[in-house]
Length: 219
Picture 1 (cartoon, helix red, strand yellow):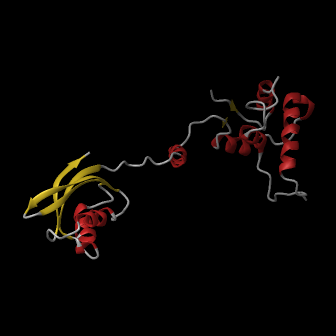
Picture 2 (cartoon, rainbow, N blue to C red):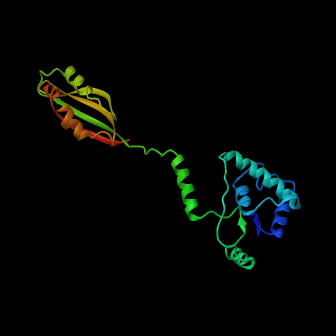
Picture 3 (cartoon, rainbow, N blue to C red):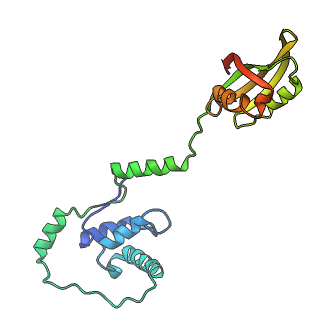
């Protein structure tokens, strides 16, 4: 609930503040807060014994502020004519002398707070899809060492690539081909690139004549 103080430069305003501070050490809670600083700035000076609660609170705030600003003050004066009392009252009314300690946040403040909260949360990592692939790897002829051919295939290593089970399948005329399973992370591995830039180029093309995709399934 909002707490509002009006005309703290007048006795009626100070009386309202004095009643509010009865039994309290600070405006909000049990420690010095921004609320105390706001009200302190609106009270022109320590009102003395006439308003004992305000006086005690004013001295407490003053002493804590003094420790926060230890530099030696030499005094500051303000030149110019003093405004007539009626004029001062009118200006005070125009400027709305009420202090709303718990006013609603502006849209800009809300947006800034939301952005700060969002920046604290770790970004949720998007999970990449995976695929299971069955590959036919064909040798040059029946004299190709199929053990070395498979070793050449499995020697290809890259992030997102996992070689699986394999077997030799007869093609004819004494020639066998290698059928091998592999699992890939779709965002990291292209099967076409794997074949064209890794498996069918030197030095592996000494054993591998060609490769064909037999099956391609999303996991």
